[in-house]
Length: 117
Image 1 (cartoon, rainbow, N blue to C red):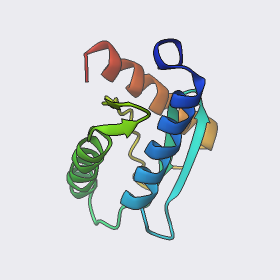
Image 2 (cartoon, one colour):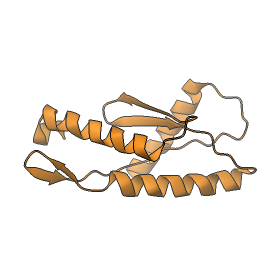
Image 3 (cartoon, helix red, strand yellow):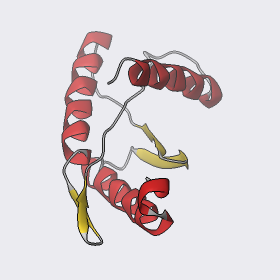
Image 4 (tube, one colour):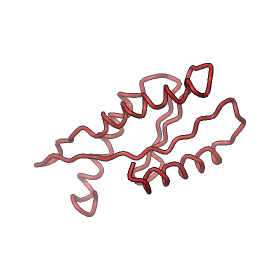
């Protein structure tokens, strides 16, 4: 994005994506953080009784996120579109430190990008 449209447009795009993420994830128990470049981390607790139910909740959230972030953006004199790849880790009461969880999410993201998702 920066190479094609410049850093000002790239920075505005990141701000808009951040605003859209904050609008989607308004829960108090949700943490949204930009960890570098164009990557964000979203940590949230899914209130479910089973891992399968958590997967279903996550799938619905991810689909909504894809829809909202993919909406065209009006920036400068033109319209831009974003694509989104998601790497996710569902923890079922497991003890895992944040570094390990981020590594697993990064691997999942790499897999999603490699498969064009």
